[in-house]
Length: 87
Image (tube, rainbow, N blue to C red; front, side, top):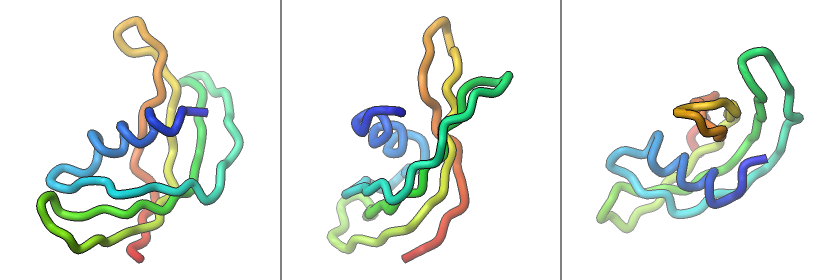
């Protein structure tokens, strides 16, 4: 499973352009599955975020997938967008 720090940094850099991540909570971890294209890990999480420089915090639930694959000679977990539900 990806470490919390890696997971948090991937979410921050991959999908919150113009936003900042305030907090994350993993609600449910799915099983990890090995497939030809790599190892896949599903997770349901709750995230809180805000527009950079603003005080108001919003949030959402998301069911997402991380894929473990090799990029530039290094193995890593890569975040893929999933189903999102606003809170």
